Image (tube, rainbow, N blue to C red; front, side, top):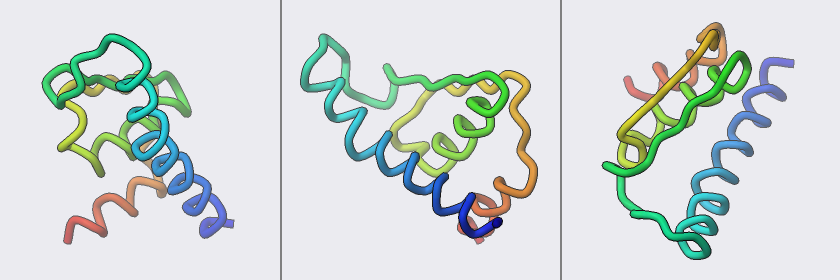
Length: 82
């Protein structure tokens, strides 16, 4: 079950960073750089925010996690940093 959750988390992260952000930057008036990009989330969205942004600090300057649990899913981020 943990492997399936990690796979789903990675898929969400890939969709966000490789598809959604480039789509938004090419179709809306944005300043497409780290200093002008933020991500925030509440509850599960907070957990996803931590996972995505800590893996992509080159993309996000501001991070807001509200009631987001780190839990076991955060091990993926800390393990990959070692």
